[in-house]
Image (tube, rainbow, N blue to C red; front, side, top):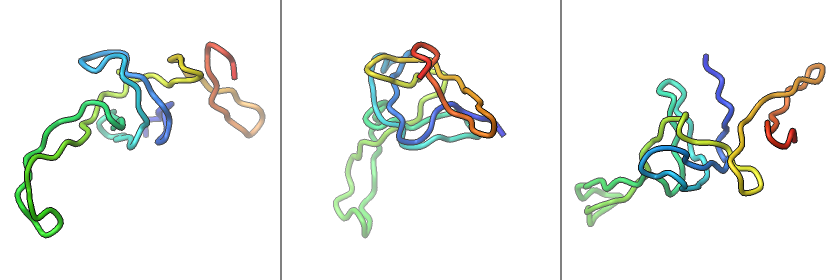
Length: 100
């Protein structure tokens, strides 16, 4: 199983693609496809039929996934690379730039 350095709830910045420079919170990580859903980024329009939950139907905006290599973790307003520091049995995620 792959290990990603991002978690749900992290704030990330898009570093490549059409939405470069956008920031948002990670909603979900799709591990088998190496993709992430970021809140408010890469919105697509989906046409929906009327249903019991949505009696009007119409056009709904929802987030589409981005490849995980196109996003970086944001710390103190700057995008940073992530590493791990192992102290005995504890493993903590640190910033490569600030070592925190």
